[in-house]
Length: 332
Image 1: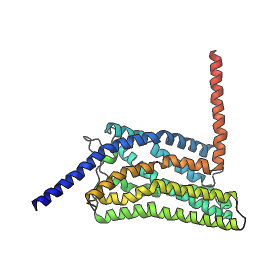
Image 2: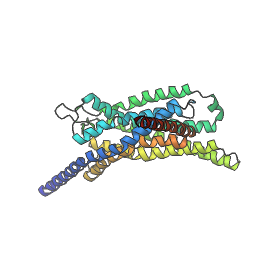
Image 3: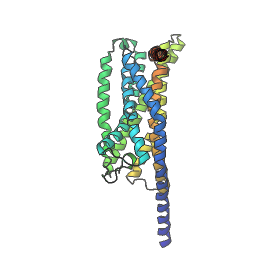
Image 4: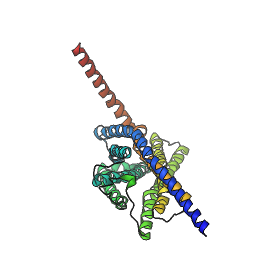
């Protein structure tokens, strides 16, 4: 009996040691990854917001949803320098309120992006199948939907910060180092069900169904030789939304259910908990890639966006070049 206990203790020690070693590499993972996506995410989303708000006057065809998607991405991107500072210095001198805000923005961006991708898919599908409704649709409807999305998603993301305990002034820790609050079984189950059903499975089913309807319409019109460019664009838009959703958010939500069970000591197996904990930061990094991938939706799938960007981008570049030339001639 003594040898068995000693063996078990050795296994637990080995498990905790492996987790500790992996924890030390997470800081480097987050630092390098956030450094890589910060500049492209900031430039692409700032440029996208500039074009969408200033030069696209007709706010139809999901433009309002794209603007809100860009705002969600920018909110997360602008918090990355503070995250990078923490993972390099391992110190958070900015106070617990700002820590919780940056922590909250991560999940707000994720779920707001998911919902707005769903809105874009639904609208493109509905406008393709019901062109008459598209002509009567007002942009203010999209504004009202967007406001409702922000309110609902903002409230639904609040448990992510409520689950974390504030760091003491002595430790000054933040983000992944914030201690998890212990939840009772009903609360843990409710959170898992809400996050997985409302934040993942529901949107996945809706986007998949929109893709199915557009593909079905595509085949039907192709057989009747009524195939149009709008059908191709709608199909391409929904497929890209589906691709971004699957690539960025599926790994996190598959692992999230297991990770929550590990943190609440529901899963106690050493090898399983170790694998789940190690994949958690990787899945979060993959989810953050949506900040860089979403602008590609606007550029490659929105003709007016591409035209306005080419037109005004070239005019700005010409203005800068002329200003540089005039300055050089003045100096000469």
